[in-house]
Image 1 (tube, rainbow, N blue to C red):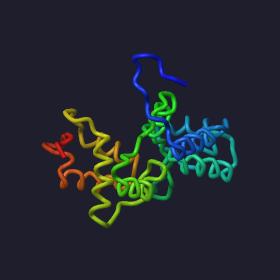
Image 2: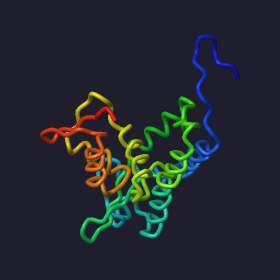
Image 3: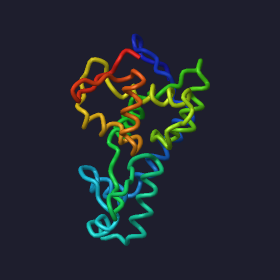
Image 4: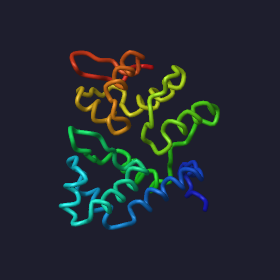
Length: 195
């Protein structure tokens, strides 16, 4: 299909991106999962509480949470004796926008190393671990720095919220972003630096 005259041609979604988007919508294809996602949209909840609110058996809730976690829509962290599940708003927003506009993050074809690192450490958009090797870590930190708009200021709490959507150890990520020059910090306020 040709673009209308005067419209910019968008890069096509690559097969891997299409498969990732299809997996996301398969995960959302069950009403119970949509209901669970709605329940945790504004506040983290435990599996037990989700079972009570949804009327589903704990094992069923656990199954649905696993499907949502696998595609990066939720993350789970330990809070005392409870595992809390929280929605990753940015992940869903980005996926919907990319799908609707036909745009997906297009890898830089001139940097296969970057692509390899991102596939290894961020296969579904969520960081699976913080690389120990400096070169790999710099690739990840550059990617995360792109979440912050140059010139806009962010209170520390907002930086923590943004980074925690990608990895539970937001403290280390925040420190690395500042120490590496991707973010500047002054009086608890952060801003994207020139790096």
